[in-house]
Figure 1 (spheres, helix red, strand yellow):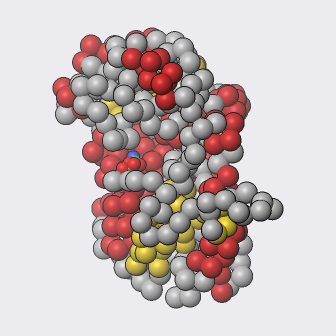
Figure 2 (figure 1 turned 90 degrees about the vertical axis):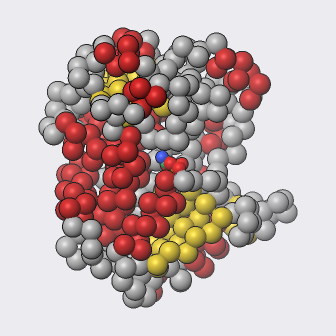
Length: 346
Ligand code: CP
């Protein structure tokens, strides 16, 4: 099976989950559920997927490689730290700095060899105004002749959000009228904002009311919240942002915990650590879960036990974290089948 670049068609990328219509997300989840019941398929025989990691991953790398292999395909996995070099994303720049190659040239070259490219970029982490442009993943998508899949950029983690939507549907059934509490929790090393950002619009469009709780200074990106407010208005759902963990969790069907960086201290590690040090009470424990309505617990992982959430909640009957991790495998298979136009896919 030659790479799509030979066919000259415009490739379909996945940079953020809500670029897909809600019906397309539902179709992907239906397909993933069929694949979960019946694992053996040969949808990707003869296909090669290139995976480029500019920073580490445990779940995404393993589940993605396993998904491709279980469908009969092949992966080529490259780590920027050991296998290649820094790549330039700015257009028209004089490349006399550290990066010896432009994404434009790398994307065009790799498109000759593989049927899709999955990329986990590494934001520079100095300025949110710069990182929020998501310039690296945008450049790969602009210049690749084969589908580009975002494996977590500064703004978006569509693969996690897709698995999360499947997990929500499996656990709750109909999502209309359900309440999701998306709560900031303390961690000495917070993650990016990509996970909370990515779930907002798909959950609101699926009929859930969403409350985002965070301490002062830990608000989500304004542009992302604005877009989510518009999605809520169109869907007739509610989005509440800010306020305490307890207020968000009260009456919630799902408590989704994540520690994310402060955009106010972005790039200033000393100030950020000092701000976080005062917030260790922001964690999910049994008392918080009991404020919910038979609430399930979700977390994208990696998770710091007894810092972000207690062992009791993480290992308890209401915890969906392992279902989320498992569903990464099934949803990524369905997504690859859709992007590569495998017959019978959603
Ligand atoms: N949830 C997630 O994307 O995990 P990794 O960072 O281990 O890939």
